[in-house]
Image 1: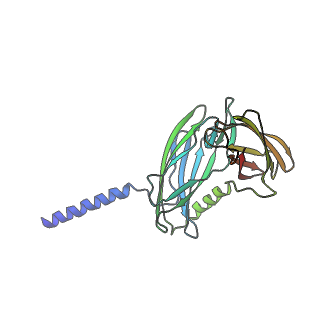
Image 2 (image 1 turned 120 degrees about the vertical axis):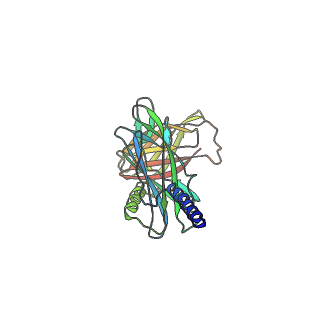
Image 3 (image 1 turned 135 degrees about the horizontal axis):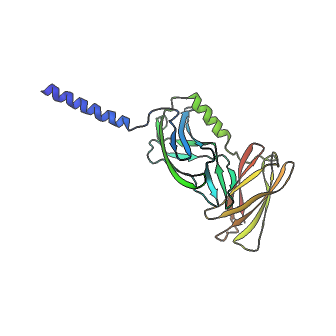
Length: 278
């Protein structure tokens, strides 16, 4: 009887352990696709040759469907990522490639379509230990109408394991992320602010670009500051001019100005540069 009780206890303990393991994501470099309305998403990650862990969220949007950039524009829902269910993560940040500008006849928004790669930078709480990366993503996706969707995905990443397939996608994703300005080649060279109304001004930005034809500019200000009607108003060889209207809900401190983050795209390249609006 005593042996039977011990065996039952061992089996019960083993059963609990198996249940706990079943509740954890499998250790893998490339996760399964999670499919919902208009989009499927998967998470992948790996260590590099130095043991540094990174990850990528990969999206495939159905034909005709779109989702929004971090700054949607005049309408739309920016993506929101919750990593509170993760463990051994001290810091988490998502990087974004430049979007496309889309006008549906009612408003202009900044969107992605087709395949989208968002690289993720991770800093573990305990260096050298595995990381459980668990992400809940709240997205706005649009076809004829726009709807909010939620997807959940998770991986356990081992800093001792380098997965070549995941690493190739990670490098592909990183290559799409804007760099800093390149002096004399790709940068804002000047800007002007015109307007008698302190709360609504017109801003003209002049840039040196790889190619003026087909260049694009995306403008982000503080919360509630809205850039409207961003357009290219001039372009000759390697110089492009952009103009936009900026609605300013609060007064500007003339000693510091207000930062505007500009993302510029030209000739298959992109940069981010910050200017301060007086």
